[in-house]
Length: 276
Image 1 (tube, rainbow, N blue to C red):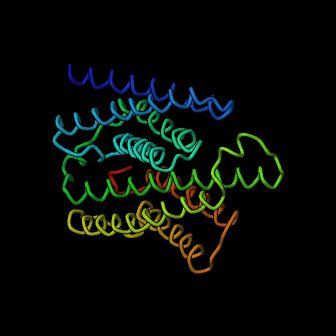
Image 2: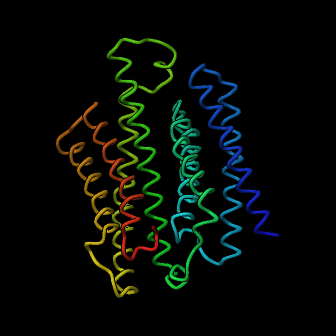
């Protein structure tokens, strides 16, 4: 009965999430503030439902639900919604919720359709430990920060293109100025890079102590360090070389592509990593 109620709760969250994204799209096209407010409150309800779902899962299973890609996608979506609501509260950046939650809804949809086909296996049950949970949670949170940083860079490129083509209008005025978009993308990466580094350190320590077949040349391991290196070069170019404008925004977008390749492709090629 409880599992059935959780399933219905998840389905309701998906429906409300879809409606919220639709309202944000209407606001994006027609500058409809009423649609914007409705979308925000629907998104807040989705966040509440997701939070209830996560805590209920924790109580029922006795573990933090991030030990396979299906659970990880759900937590990733929760992180995106949490970040976007906080950004809307403190920064008031128009369109950030729309673009961020396009990513979030895609991930939640993948989670919903994969839920019945990807249940945690015996290996996941055996490998539970506080170290592994902290490692995975920190990695997902850093990925959430990288994702929203990517959204800021996309908005930067959009704003840059509108200014270059001298397309003045309400959409141009509603997007934040270029310097603020660039700064927000940078600040999120500043937070995410060391968090990902700490996550990889914890994961490496855990793997050496728990696994017999841990290899540095595993696809998932190499991919994770590739993500760290690419984003570290972003910070290097930004801080040391003082790379500005469109070039650094394109670099950030390319780095996010590397992140997606690592998350989906390299994860499926991993020989030992259960988070795949």
